[in-house]
Length: 421
Image (tube, rainbow, N blue to C red; front, top):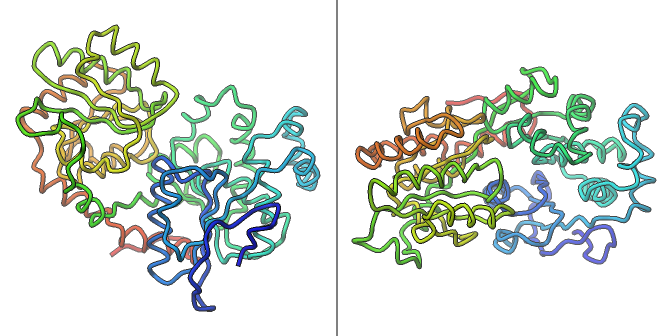
């Protein structure tokens, strides 16, 4: 058991004892929030139900899914160390890695790097059989920790977004700018490299110089039973009551990659033609800018942004269309979840897994990124001629939780390729 008094990391739950022979799977993510946090919560729960011992490693105690983890799952909070504790650990990395570090980064590292001492301690003490690290910086730090400790833990690294676009987004952040070089140096040491779509895999191979054959795609899972159960609940929102105008729905962090300004401009164009409403679920740093844009477009009275909602499926089940306006994605969970609810979808044909999920437009209209007029037209056509709900649900079943968990376990437990039935 992980000692909660340890100064480098602390467990915040007491696990139910598991058989000693059970494999131990560790999942490392910055926080249990957002799409990645939701997926890791789902995987942790699924692995635990199958009899595996599961640790969930996070940097932040916040996150809406943290307290919902089953009692059988270890929750490990990796404390962020001071620079004085982190620097001696960094200086033990191979010389070819240290040469990449600007002087400033060594003495002002981001939180993920300052979690390295705690992660190193965890891996040396607990020795999980396998550790899955989500997002590039977590993967790099995990590989460093294994190299420093010399443990035999199998490490699987996963990219969850379109890597080249993330680099552009984080161009002002020193560590993120180094990631392509660090990935070239360290990802080959991983036992397996995964992404959440073929598009993301192609982009990672090209951007970071990773051989494409080293990268395996595992799509995100959809827990159909969970979604159906929550979709049946009535949300506390008067716009979704019967006999109200049709509601367009968008779900996602209020950030640049979701390109909500294009959606708002498309909605403003649609609102001139018919009575509609728009709900955007999610929170983020662009809220003020988006609210200002709503006012400027004179659509504020027909747009609501209630923030993070724990049950978006109740909204999806009652919306007329779910719209994804993203500039890029890794794999669009929100489209898959909406389809599981039988909700018609319209999406930009952005880099990532959108084209794959919608099978080139069979399950929802695809439009160019950033073109609000074309987006408005596609929404209008979908309102008038929606895709059959059962057809959408059948597509979602292809990404069922059991199917995707089987694929994860094949990779996590040591197979280099995935076999599908």
